[in-house]
Length: 145
Image (cartoon, one colour):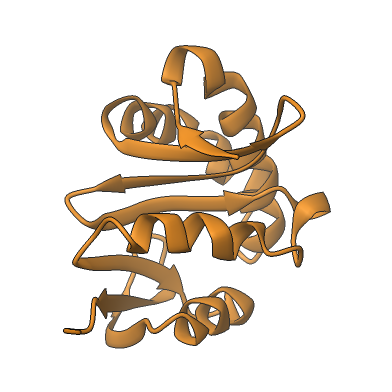
């Protein structure tokens, strides 16, 4: 079931999931646990103020997404629940409610880039992140029917 993210209720689970997955996927930064751990407070601040949704089954949050001004700040599916359509369901839920979306993604996250491209996102630019790694801007616009 997809429901609104409730920061007071859900923060511990989504923060733990975020840190675990971000360290796993973006392990190319120097000392990933330390590097991303320092950004955990920023993630929590964004999550508290963003529009967010969780994918929950049997009381277990398996994925979440946060959006601010049509920008996807975070979209995380717990690794043990990936490749089961959960990320697609969550993104489709948001895409049904938005006219456009954008995000930034590290060039080294090829699986993530392919996931978003399959769902209609296109690369719109490339830049060097504050971390010194190449990132793509990706955008999606709802097609006129």
